[in-house]
Image 1 (cartoon, rainbow, N blue to C red):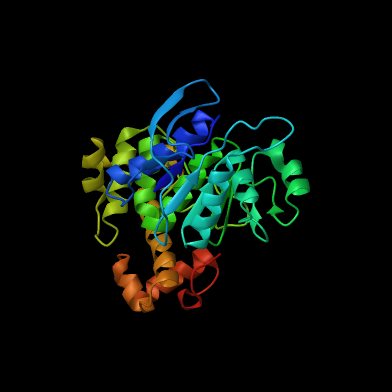
Image 2 (cartoon, rainbow, N blue to C red):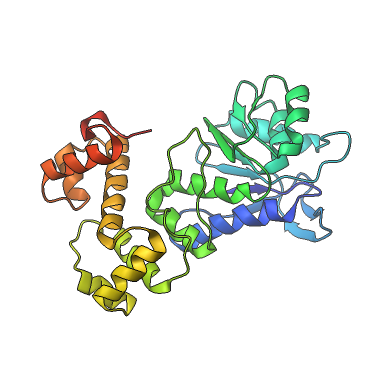
Length: 309
């Protein structure tokens, strides 16, 4: 993963997403962070911190992910090193994925890679983007947008949401849930996408025992579990776990497990060629007919119809 550090970069635009990808790497994801700049060496951030040891702009290709954190833009508008703009354009043409945070979308627009694509940026830059780059399909009131190999996010903290979304695309919801847990954040999505993955829901509480039970259920979806076993993980009595789990998440441990299994099933149906029966078994359902009934009740369609949107 290549992080393009521009002059006057906003530290949270840089640090938030980088922290998410670093956490994913420590949990086993294949991300290796490389920090580069148009003029290799040192860049001064918008907050006055000098960032040193930056490498030169490398060659890119398929399999690379380029992250462009947003800089503080001068009036009256964007002014970026031409070498950086040219490099971003070449990266996309070479088959790399590119993701921008906040005002970093203007770099992508200058490179022409947003022409004809849906995108977003910081709310204060939307009107300028629309007037300066009329071929870009700029959306407001969304947190992030994916359009082919190009992804863009709204202001500052939305870069973390974008990073979690990219991690989920690359490595699935279970690892993404672990990253979100590590960062003590949760994933938010814009209205054009599916609702929050069940692996990322119900994680906004601070009950460590319930979190341990949730982690265990997510990691052993194809295994049966007893309330006694789960209660022991939380250092609670079975009745105490039931009360604590419901208070923290709004559902029982059994309901939570079922949601995880059905969410995984929806992903498998969309992304593999497994039969409905095989998916049911993979997700811990011993009876395919029971699985079909539960799936239909949750998503309003049979599993043979594929993943809900």
